[in-house]
Image (cartoon, rainbow, N blue to C red):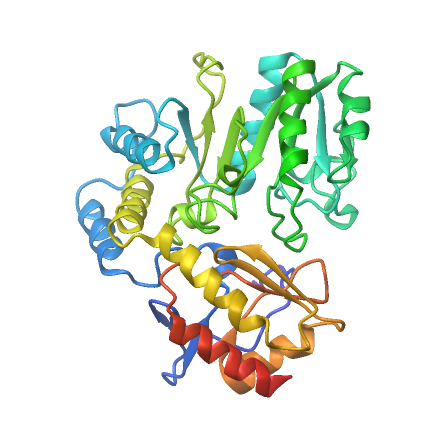
Length: 374
C-alpha cells in the first residue's frame, strides 16, 4: 500500500528532537523555527512534558466521556487561571478543525441562525463547516460549498453591518492574526466595532486562536491585545506540544445541554496530561512573557535588513515579507544552513513559528544564515 500523495515533502527525516532542534539519522541538527505549524510550543522533548505523559501512560490512556475524568477539570481550572477566563466553559476535542467545527455548530444552535461571516484570506480547517469558512476555493469540495458563508475584508465596518442587519448571521469567525493567510491583522478599532455590531444584531463572535493562542503572541490569546470579549474561542496546536488535542472556550451566557456537542477521543486522559504539562511549563518558565521579549528582539534584528520589505506578526508569530517568492530561500535555509521555516498563501512571506523556548542566540543564528542566503 502507498501513502495518499497530498503533501509536497522536503528531503528531511527527523528522528529525534530537543528543545528548538530536531536531528536526522546522521545526528545533523536543524534549528526548528516553524514548530510543525506552531504546534511545538514548549520545545521538543521537554522533560516535564515527557514525564507527565509517561506517568499517565502507565495508569490509564483512554476512556470515553461516559465517566468522570478529573484531569479534564484540572485542565479547565489551570487554563482558566492562565488565560484569565475562569468564567468560561471548556469543551475538549482533538484538533483545530474540530474545535472550529464545534464553535460554528454551537453558534448556530445558540442563535437559531445558519449564515457565517468569515474574512478574506482566512484559514479555519479542513472539516465540513471549517473548510467552508476558509477562503481558499482549491480546498473546498462541492459538498462543503453549500454552507451559507459570506467573506468580507478586514477593517470595513459598513460592509459588516450591511450583512449583519439582514438578521440571518449566526456568528462571525475571525483570526485576530491570520496564520496561513500571511499574518495580516485587523485594526484594533475594527475589532471593537465588530463586537458592538455583533452584540447589536445578535451574532456570536468566534475567535479562532488555533495558531495564535497559548502565549504565542505575548498574550495568552491574540484577541487579548484588544479589548473585546468573544463568545467562543477555539484552540489547538500549541495546546498539546504535539499531542493531538483541541477545544473551545464558551462564554458563560451559553448554556450546555446533554448531547449538544460530543466526541469520542476528545479530552482523553493522555491528552489532558499532555495539555496540563504544557500549561505548567508555560507558567513556570514564563514563556508568554518570554515570547514578548524574543519577538521584540526579532523585530530589532530584522529592521537592519534592506531586503525585508515588511515585518509582520506579534510575539513569536512572525513573518518577513520580501519582494520575491520565498520558496527557494526556504530551501536554501533548510539545506545549506539547516534551519526550518514556513510559508503561507502569501508567496513572498517567510513565516516563523518557533517553540516559545527559543533564545536570542537562536534568533541571531537565523539572521546570520538569512543574510548569507540572501
